[in-house]
Length: 147
Image (tube, rainbow, N blue to C red; front, top):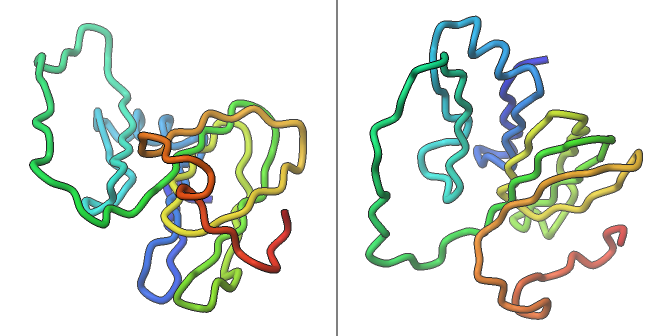
């Protein structure tokens, strides 16, 4: 199993999976940092394996002057348990086109419609863009998909 996997459907990256062993592989490669996400993704996810005493120069990130039609992505880190994440493509009439099984230590960056089925008691950390706009404006549910 690759340390970083991209789930691609018809030339579109639907998800990026950073497996639990990615940091071990980064460390053994001798590199200090690697970004798992493509440069055009709104969420940029990097992993770091840095030695004691290493430093990153103090800095701010400059705000973007304007953002329009920015796709909403989500980030999940599985702390415990196991979850099946089903991936849907709106270009295919909201059809389910793939799925991911994520386990302890795995990280998933979603770039498409999705549903989740928890295969075990699971703890996960989620990150997505804000601010929260309310359920009705925030989500469009996929008809016929499991709830």
